[in-house]
Length: 171
Image 1 (cartoon, rainbow, N blue to C red):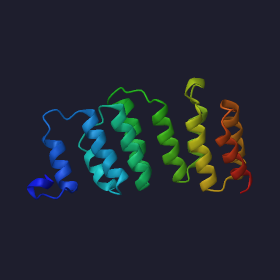
Image 2: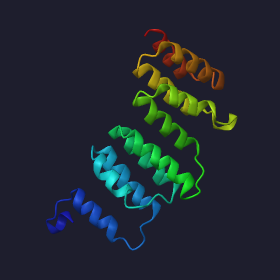
Image 3: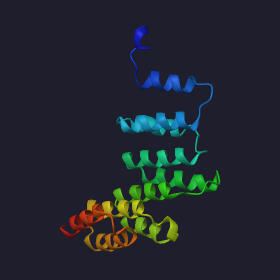
């Protein structure tokens, strides 16, 4: 394109991706992530809303874009649609994205309740880390200490968790 005198932009990128004969999950995810990472979250949501909630990775990217934009309702809808409309089961990445979405928006109790119903296998460090980050952001000391204790019990050998815990204690 550059050799032809055409400067790449969000419009040319989208046109190239859409012109692909096989719009694979990788192509859509690349486009959505590229928009989100370059400050074009609204454009990413536009692509997600084209009805492509058929793959769990696209749902994860959709929820992450909603985190950036602070669109809690839309993130909840994305999460619900993956179960109800497409029969996709949420994985760890979905739980982390939803805790991040709810936590950043200040819905700490709802985020914590969503963690408490997860199975033991789903209670992995990234879920607790997202929750701890939300507690730090909103200066919720008591909940943050409780979350940090869970995080340290799950992965006590990770020194980063102790750093996060000490930051939480300094609030």
